[in-house]
Amino acid sequence: MESRFLGLAYLTPYIIGLLVFTMIPFLASLYLSFTDYTLINSPVWIGLENFRDLLDDRTFKRSLNVTLLYVFLTVPLKLAFALFIAVILNYRLRGIGLFRTAYYVPSILGGSIAIAVLWRYIFADAGLVNLVLTSIGLDPINWFGDPVNALFTLALLRTWQFGSAMVIFLAALQAVDKSLYEAAAIDGANKWHSFWHITMPLITPVIFFNLIMQMVQAFQEFNGPYVITGGGPLRSTYLLPLYIYDEAFKNFNMGYASAIAWVLFVIIMILTLVAFWSSKKWVYYAGDKRS
Amino acid sequence: MSTPDTALTPASPTRVIILNPEDRRAERLSAFVRYTLLIVVGFIMLYPLLWLIGASFKSNAEIFNSIGFIPQEPTLDGYRKGWETSTPYTFGRFFWNTFLIILPKTVFTVISCALVAYGFARFEFRFKKLLFASLIATLLLPNVVTRVPQYILFRDLGWLDTYLPLWVPSAFAGDAFFVFMLVQFLRAIPRDMEEAARVDGANSFQTLIYIVVPMLIPALISVALFQFMWTMNDFLGPLIYLSSVESFPVSLALKLSIDTTEAFDWNRILAMSVLALLPALVVFFIAQRYFIEGISVGGVKG
Image 1: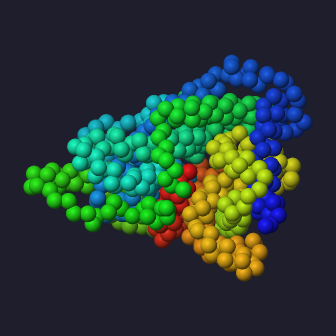
Image 2: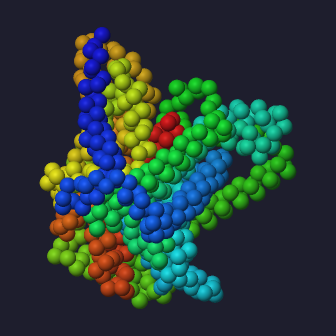
Image 3: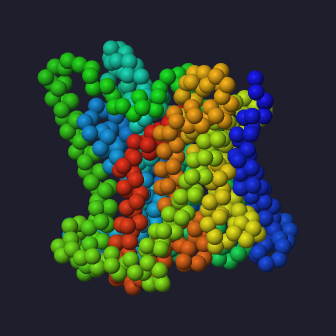
């Protein structure tokens, strides 16, 4: 029998990292959100002033609205695409591996600046999308000049990267016990019934997992708006992470930036908790089959 | 028990189901619809990438005039001019910088995450549940909330404009996702061999090195590959911490070249974008199995 501390010894790097790079910064940012700190002097405690300022900050309100719109638009769209394609791929199709790869490529590359650059050029006035539109006799669209269109191009970029969620769905679909379908078929269920009453309940844990991960990621989107639209036009794509970046690393308002970051964090946490709470009603955990 | 592999094999094609002709016709029709859909959607999705590659070999005039991706008069103009950049450095320098960031980061990640995952998966100790919960919490914690204090910390340490802020956190198992993924892999590996080794007198570290690591190689490759991709794509980290152009990685250099290039010189930027994507694409196609296993195991079993 070895020492009870051996396991902890292996965890040492993690524990140090957790404290130094996560826990302390996490608490420090809460503290900073109550201060005025521009990196020149030491932080000055100002109580709730940053948060009071946020209430009157029109840029913040605009940014928050845009962020919520972006998240509520892209997360369901991305999950729906991912699930839809995964279900189609899950039939006994030849070439499933090939399709899976093809659909996965965008999400492997998607976070890259090169892809943001590509997006910027295909939606530019003289870009590919407008060339296609004019070649089929439609009018070109001013993608980045119009607030709704600009946000749409960013939402499309995120949806385009549904591959990783799809791979997770596909693995879950393939893990569904095939004998359940046979039993259901004998009982006279058609494919649609089987899908709704067998497949869906069994993959709800994975839907839940994907939902949380996609939401947390969508709230933090930075590269796309930073490179493609620069937050414009009229701040229509000025997502909160962009605002935090500008406040912190351009204006060096570390206190105010921390306050915005904490508001964003609290929103994400509340939505995550709502998801967890509601999951009791819709997520189905089959016995202890996996372990 | 399901190993990573079985979760990936397609629905068993061996089962023979006898259908009457009408059902068979319906089956064939629905297969046709499914294939058509998959091909059309896939084509639309991948066309931008094809176009990017084609356009990088076109002249600027041709980029603005044709929607096809095959260049009529292929030219290396974009590559030649793009590679030079408007800075004193070529893209060669920026690729080298990217490599300098990736290599230590990947090595640190693999070592630290393997140690920590081994601790979690094979030992009992106080606060284990709490620590594992902290791992999951970190996984969900938005980075945006820790970024400002991290910046201040690295600034106080005098690490700004060096690669240290990018390297060091990975030496402390900074990416919870990888630890989690490795713990999932380890749980699926039977302990018989390790127990035999322990009976023969190996200590826990020897067991890790000689028994566990060899079995864990595929998972460690997954970790290294994911870290490679993520670091290759990382933009915000370098953007915050690096200020000298001479130490820019490719991602920053690319953004810099959009800002400094004439509005209609598209081909050189598209050409450099192709080069920026190339390492990730090559690695993905060589080793895609590891990516798909990593994401399936890390995700599904969670």
